[in-house]
Amino acid sequence: MTEEQKKYEETEQAGAQADAAVEEKTTTDNGEALKTENEKLKQDLLYIQAEAQNTRRRLEKEKKDAVAYSVTGFARDLLSVADNMERALAAIPEEIKKDEKIQSLVTGIEMTGKELANVLQRHGVKRVEAIGAKLDPNLHQAMVEIESDEPEGTVVQQMQAGYTLHDRLLRPAMVAVAKAKSGETKPA
Image 1 (cartoon, rainbow, N blue to C red):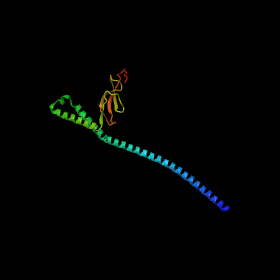
Image 2 (cartoon, rainbow, N blue to C red):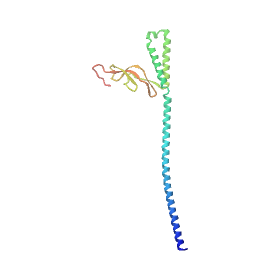
Image 3 (spheres, rainbow, N blue to C red):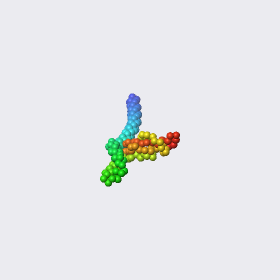
């Protein structure tokens, strides 16, 4: 082998080694880039899965609420019927209630009122108990203050019943609230 051939072979070997090194470096760089991209894609996938799960939960809650509160308008309309039933019974004097001719009518009105209350309760409508309770602006609407021996801020009279549907207020109770008698102050 001549000197020229040796140089040629050495140059070829050096070139082949350089090519191999470049290829190895490129492969390593590509491998690192692929690993980085793979990690990013995994993170994106986790984020999308979490977002989908949160959306699913939110939609389930909205659906549940829609079902639970779908009767809100209808229930509000029925409350005026319940109020009128109570007013009708309250307007009948006691001596007339005892009259045998009227007694069955009064009993029918009472039974209808009770059945209406049961139907409302079956569908999640509950009456707000107000008398004797501390005024709660979330449940009561104070219409007037009345001098009373009760502690200030206590509901002493109810003008109109309040109602809730599950945990939401349908209508506040219209109430009279105790205030201290003139010259006195009673802590709540």
